[in-house]
Image (cartoon, rainbow, N blue to C red; front, side, top):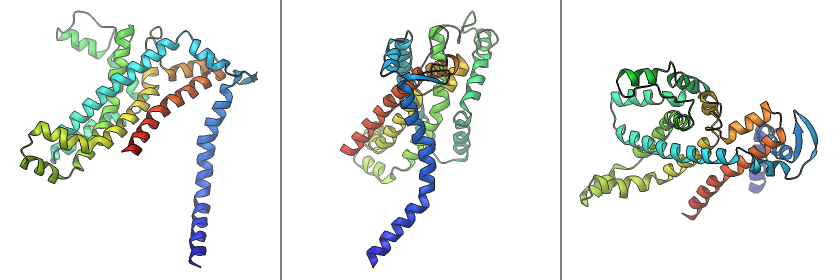
Amino acid sequence: MEGFRTKNRSLTGVIFIAPALIIVALLTFFPYVYNVWMSFQRIQYGTSHGFSGLENYIKVFQHRSFRTVLINQIIIIVASGCAQFLLGFSGALVLNHNSKFMYILRSAILIPWLVPGVVCGLLWKWILDGNVGILNILLTSMGLCKQYIPWLSEGTHALISVIVVNVWRVFPFMMVMYLSGLQSIPSEQYEAAMIDGANSRQQMFFVTLPNMKPIIGMTLILSSIWNFKIFDVVWTLTGGGPAGATEVFSTLVYKSSFQEGNFGFSSAVAVIMAFAIAIPIWLYLRLQKEQ
C-alpha cells in the first residue's frame, strides 16, 4: 500500500511538471535539433536546396575569415577572462567589509552588469569615438597624448577596446559571486590559521583560495561561455570591423545568415560554437566528479 502511494505521488509530480517540460523542449531542444538539421542543408534565403553533407562544415574551416575569427575569439576569451577574474576577486577582497558605505559601493559597482549589452556598447561607442569621443578629449586635455587615438577604427585598438568594454561589463558579476564566497568562509578557519602563526599571504593561499575553489571554477566557466558567445558589445562597437579585426563567431553567424542569407553555413558555425562551449563545461564537471 505504501509503495502504491509513493508511486502515485511520483506520477502526480510528473503530471504537474509535464507542461513545463513540454514548453522547455519546444523552446530549447527543438531549435537545437532544427539548427543541426539546417547545418547539413543548402539553405539560401530560407529556401532549402537539398542535403549537403559536411559541405557547410568544410566551408567554415576554409572560410577566409576563419583563422582571424579563431584568433580574435581566443584573445577575447583569455584576456577578458583573466581581467574579469583579477578585477572581480580583488574587488571582492576590498569590499569584504560590513559598513553602510560598502553596501552603497557594492550596489554602484553592479550598474555595468545591469545595463543591457546594446546600451553598454552604444555608450562606449560614444566615449571611444575617434573624433568626438570624451576619452580622447580628456586624454589630450590632460596632456597624456598629443593626438586623438582611433580606438574603434584601427585593428589593435579596436580589439583592445572590445576587451576593455567586455571586462567592464562582466567583472561586477564576478565580484559579487566572489564576495558571497568570501563571506561564506567560517571565521574560525582564519582564527585557527592565525593561532598557527599564518600571515595574511598564507591565509590567502591555505584558507581563502581552497574555500573559493568551487566558486572560482564555476565563474571561470561562465566567463568563458559569455566571452565566447559575445555579440552585442562587439556588434554595437565595431560590427566586427575594421576589416575583420574584431570579428568573432557570433558576428560571423549574424552576417552569414541575416546579411548573406546563407543559413546552412551559419548553422554549421553555430553547431561548432555549441561544441566549443560544451568543452569547458564537460571539463569542469569531470573535475568536480573526480574531486
